Length: 276
Ligand SMILES: NC(=O)c1ccc[n+]([C@@H]2O[C@H](COP(=O)([O-])OP(=O)(O)OC[C@H]3O[C@@H](n4cnc5c(N)ncnc54)[C@H](OP(=O)(O)O)[C@@H]3O)[C@@H](O)[C@H]2O)c1
Image 1: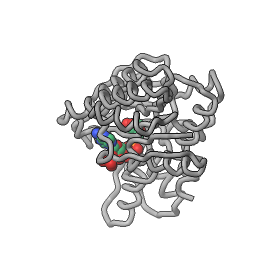
Image 2: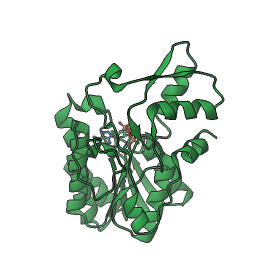
Image 3: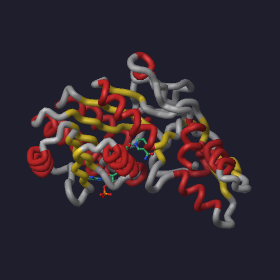
Image 4: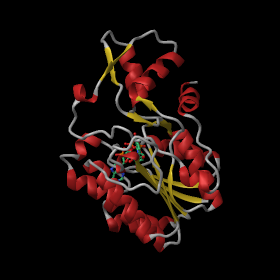
């Protein structure tokens, strides 16, 4: 299979590269310097020259706070970038995998959210990612759009931040009032391959099962690493940031349940495998 991976230097991009390499796929890996997905001409050129059967878009503007002031750029990367890849992949008959986020919801409902729940993003990041979902779907019917959450893999993420903090002397305070589903890039990558093999197109929630607060998650990381460090509680109000975080963004992988089955692990199993 010929695969173009965009955002190949990011967390998920690296994981997809590893997985596709193990499957002996013929890959073209692009970082932002090789292909700027905001540029439609460059996108068409790379896609038409390489002629992939599958495009996996791992590129995004993921700096949630920065998006609040970098609005045009957030929409250019997260929405127009998705549009460009959707059009270009369609032009060569390729399928498109695109990633989205729990930030498309407002986090106000106190129950797990399915693909059938109304979206209501509260941040520029969430709004631009929702626009990206729509544009990815609009120009290429052969699309797989996966909404994931609290992602960690090879790169900058919460797990690494906690382990770095644990190595220092400072008190660790982590919020107890934001709930979600920590998910590894390994689990998302495995699911992507399954959906591709089954040609199960559409929009899917793709998060590890169960729910926890960031504070619970930090405690579990330290428990598994046998780090004897106290994780003190705090509230979101003590940690005000430019972009509002969803309070309760627990995703239920309902489309997977209704179609080919949900292979995502529990969040506890997922972090155990990652730290092993
Ligand atoms: N991280 C999370 O917690 C999280 C949660 C839910 C959903 N997601 C979604 O999951 C996907 C993967 O996230 P991630 O954590 O793997 O992201 P990441 O580590 O931040 O990587 C994103 C990559 O996008 C590339 N990029 C940025 N602007 C670009 C442009 N204009 N053209 C081409 N490439 C560009 C960057 O490339 P260079 O490094 O080459 O500059 C970067 O490596 C994204 O769609 C994200 O929205 C992430």
